[in-house]
Image (cartoon, one colour):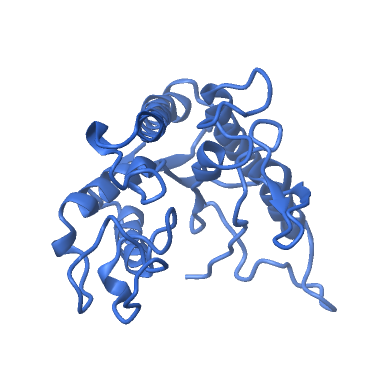
Length: 262
């Protein structure tokens, strides 16, 4: 399997909806916006598709991307919800709503479809309210009012987006015929994370007990990273990434209990 990665750390779906700016560490001066999916990643793919390898006449993509053996994967949303001009802090671009974000995701799929993509995997948003940045002692009204409200708002945002994905995806692929002859798998990452979080002993095999509330970065004993669900306060650990990858292969094989297919 040949992989091409167009993801950029810190990016959002579109800077016209939730612009996320780079902040220089020493000066704290705000820099340019992070490259987003719609304004950078998709155009970068389109440009690569039209170019050749340096000093050759060979197409950039080797082997060639064909509808029958190429899969296009979309996983975006964390930065749209939690950082910069985000929905969590009600600081998104003026007048923008959650449906603008989900419309952006399908607009990105439109561009990929126009470029020849016919097989897609759409990954929904993770349960970010369980991440250390939001969970800690705030779940179930155990924290201060504002902190608890932030965790519960994040819970509401992710489940709302995922509900849109759940119903709009089959509509676009099978009812409205927005993507003729295309097929899609909706990978329910939210449910996978939820199972991992509440049954950690089945998934983490470090020398220390499984830990889903802390993270590797905060750990005093970094000798057991495979005990943790989280790498830092928001990103999955390497072990969690392995679990996602294992389940992703099952999605591609058409046998995942965490996927719906259309």
